[in-house]
Image (cartoon, rainbow, N blue to C red; front, side, top):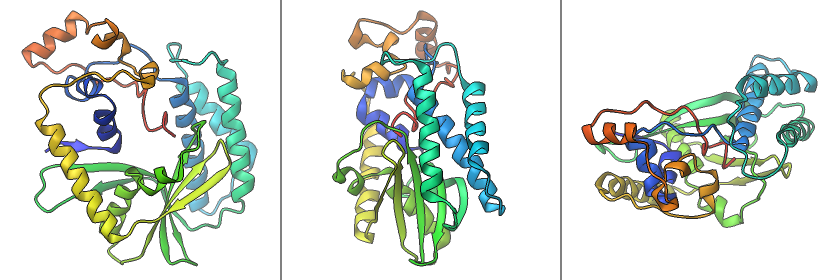
Length: 283
């Protein structure tokens, strides 16, 4: 059985060669995480910490939230951080501060029925299907007025997608399947994205027919991945943020000999701990 995630599925769709290096060969990344991923991670850390306090009946002051964000930034900052755009690192830090200030005042007093943060979700696509999907919900809430669960996801991206992106989003829709299976109370699930750069909240829902189609489409994709033997490169603008560009044959580069030997002999390479293109990069 292979454990899949939305990020793993997306990696295959974006570039099969990167997928192979990262998930099959498990080759360590030659570069650190991107500054965009770092920003997203630290903002998520601060909001996760904040809502854990809220669940306990505490409402931290804004300066406490900013302090948590600052500490996370300092603790997780690395010297080899990938910065594609010629923008000072401090500017990214300041953006995160603004995101949290805007969010705090927009959602105060935070009486929105938050149940859990960073909730692990298992998604079963079909009975006896040998593969599963795992995910982590940024924040799960229960809306009393609508008698519905809410899946909240924080996004720190600079761009705001078209409406169709939310109507066809796979990640939160898969999570909603996991929530429905877990609670089994037939309550609707609302998908909510917080685009912090725009101080905007966007909501969407899925019908049962849409979720059934999503299951079938995801099973088809996973079967394609499992059957793939040739992992072609896919040059695109995303290559600028790819942690494996230095190893990519499409750019005239190659995987270091030490890792090539392990691939040929079947020895597993050490897993990379640098999520250069993680959920935070797309957040």
